Length: 455
Image (cartoon, rainbow, N blue to C red; front, side, top):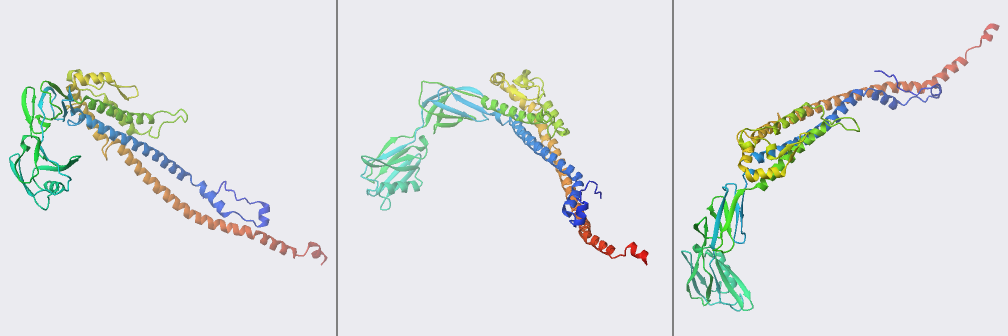
């Protein structure tokens, strides 16, 4: 143990006064002089913390890029999305699923599907007593018998009774200035749910307001019928919504790839890629103020990731009508490795060469397959390049924490030893004036030299 440079603050005056020394201060000076290795380890920990934060952020961005790449290469994803549009939405509208085939179709709506309904003559109020009796309905092919008795002989009671049962109709009470009426509506639209009153002994007169009728329309000249105005069977993957009757007006329905979703998917991919590349570039950019690079500038894994991504985005496929690279689709690379989208070029490709665009990302040897496979490796939880760096950082952090803990234990033991030693020194210094006084007293009792000579 070296005490070179330790200030004990001992002066001739302090010796004679018995002031002693500040044991705690002296011990702390000695211990502080030996903390050099610990300070180095603590700085290494701080550096590793900064590196871990940046690695985690880049790794998160890399996972987001993988998600966007998967969306492009997924055969059931964004690029498979289809859209159906109607030239006259006031007559018919349409929606399409991914399974729909592209094409143009003509629809003519002759008549809409209707749901059978009946209403009664008005009575004073919904609680007015009705005569007992039986109403027999024919709902489609099924006869239904509704019995009115003392348990349900008001419009409110009758409606509740019908709605609790399985009569094929829904009942409601409608009120106006003439009184209250019972309304019956078939639960099944079209002719299959048509309703007729075959017998009525209740005294409550019922009138038909609408007969059950199937929708009648044609698609590409083929006559079709539907029990509802929402048609899902006429064209696989396409749902038609018949809005109004227009027997003399052909309506064009166009089923095509959803270029808006495809454009969004491309832009999302480019944004995610630029987030990763921008984060990597910032680590290698020299700060003009500090003249230093980022915490990960010396990380070989980050250099490897940068090289891998740059190689991936310049990957080209063969043939494909000339759409072989990102640049051919209007996705261009800047000098710093980031990408930008030429919306005009991309729009042209999507409008005129959609299958080539789709094939570029989704073919067996396509861009998406290649990049997706690489991203799977790069983001592997144990072997991914950034996850390896994170694991290594965690291991070194753990080692440094243990080293610092062991070092502090040794310093604690040393502190106890030094405190004991310098407490003894302090005690001696505090006793010094008393010892000096004793010596001087003893010297004062000694005979002088002149006395000795006279004898």
